[in-house]
Image (cartoon, rainbow over all chains, first blue to last red):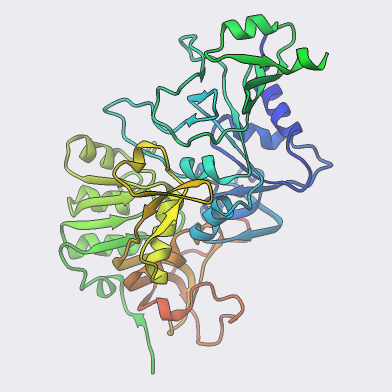
Length: 217
Length: 231
């Protein structure tokens, strides 16, 4: 099956983030988006541990243990950056100030429910961090994930079987097979990997799909 | 004369009693008041409730406190990390109680305690397993959970500079939980890399006003070069 590469997925997400946006990129796949933000747009990255205006990783040897991102990796602060405490940082999300967040996921439902913090295994050490705050805290929530699990099961589902992170919070899903919008009518396919037909996409997706491309033609 | 400067980390934590609730600042190791935690281990109070974002890294700081079996319960958002084996072992053995709180709710519960708020409605966590048993309410078409403040008997935090009135400034993302924990505890103990004379901190730039701080301990570290690594 034809797929978008991880870099292509990151490009697709970056394309959908406009100039002037305040954006939080989640841990994992979403961090790739930072490398693809168009140079002619000024986009401010937020990291929930307390920095707006996050820059790329420092050169080796320039790491500062007091300057890290939410994944606890060393980062830099760009000109115009600001530092703040945790209550302010999460007020930026919960208070509706952050324009976008891009999150990874285990599952997304047809109604935009998100499961990305716990696989439900009994002996797993639970950890939630900022996942639930991010899920409900940005004006628009993008999910970036593989379309299928390693076992070949659809991560887009009618109803999440994993514990929820947030209810009806996802706006757009970017997978290695397609870009889909969560709408009141259901999931609408905006884009497909080259050569992948709508029927082929439906066959591997665990929820009904509508074809925006067909409507447009 | 007000003088909140305490001579040593040991003296600063000498009255933390068994059963106390102790807030510990830091996000991972950034802002972690490691020397104060070491002093708490040496002092030896038991049955502590710890409030901190994580549950310790490797075998230092908070992880060492857990390993010393001084903690009954931990309230945190993200205990599982690549190097959290001390917590993981205690949790799997049923030897520590965990209250898992989404990070923003944790921060706001701490802030609420410091601000005298009795409880608050938050959208974070609604409809998830972490909402079980919690009061809910629909306000203007949106669903919320009722969350209560978290007070501390003590807060142990790290800052860059402090003065004898307890005014503090922080360094970069090491600020994280420091300011809100300072306001939420009955006794806030700040370890600072440098004590400065009253008046040296720009009043426009003070992050934590001294009213929120009861004790300041100077614990110098190699100063990080601009953009560089602390030696």
